[in-house]
Image 1 (cartoon, rainbow, N blue to C red):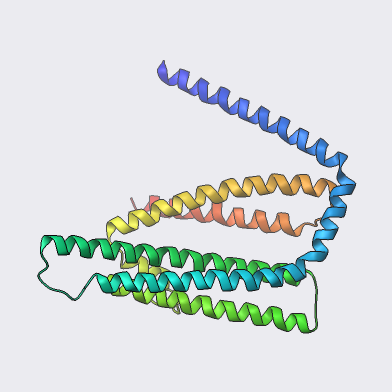
Image 2 (image 1 turned 45 degrees about the vertical axis):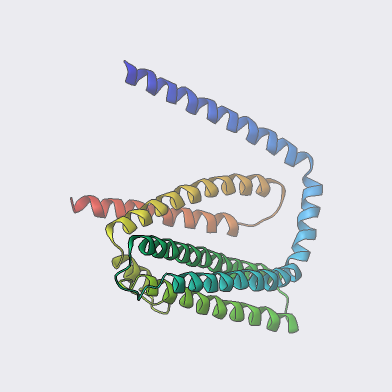
Amino acid sequence: MKTQKTTKHHLLRFIGILLVSMLIGLAAGIAVGAGSEQLTGLLERLTGLVPGASLVLMAVFGAGFLTAGLVLLRLGDRQAAAARLDAEELDEAAQAAQEDAVWRADRRYGIGMTIVSVEVVLNLTLFGLWAQGGVGGLQSLWAVGLLFLFSFLALALQGALVRSAKRLYPEKQGSVLDTKFQQEWFDSCDEAERQMIWQCGWASMRAVSRAMLVLFVLLIVLGLVADIGPAPMLVLGSLWLVQTLSYQRAALKLGCKR
């Protein structure tokens, strides 16, 4: 009986969410349709500003994010040195201080790697936005130069962060220059670390699925009033399909091993 009530409650809640979403979508469609001319003009002006703004943002984000990553690397190295990893026969207080220093260093390396990873995505995205503008000449040299410069610096900083982390945990394996780096690093993790990686992957998949759904709705509404072409929808749909199929393939593969 309790199960039936719970099922009805979930069904009613789902129907309510669906109806509210439809009403919001209808209101948004009417609002966008009423201001379609203004929206089209705004999109055209933004399109004209994108190439130049992309180069500026590439330089600003590249310099800022990589500087922050380098600072975190240095702070982490300082904490790692304070941990006195080569010391032997530490008393209880010294051992607690060592563990705290190792945790702080690992934390800084992790945040640094996150910042550098975000910079890699932003660098490629902004370069892609610049390329959509079809700008040539000297600006092309600047754009390509910035792309390669920040890509190389990001790779070098990632390598430095990994090497520093491996000094904290000598059992870790892999090099960022190796195409199998992620697999080698995962294989060198213990069971607790692997559980954490799996939980992070699950959280990432849920966040991406929700973001794709929202983007799909926005693109559909935008496509009703502006000529955005099929590319955005095809790209988003392809990525969503890859995520769905890769998850289902892994689930079926693991299920067969039981």
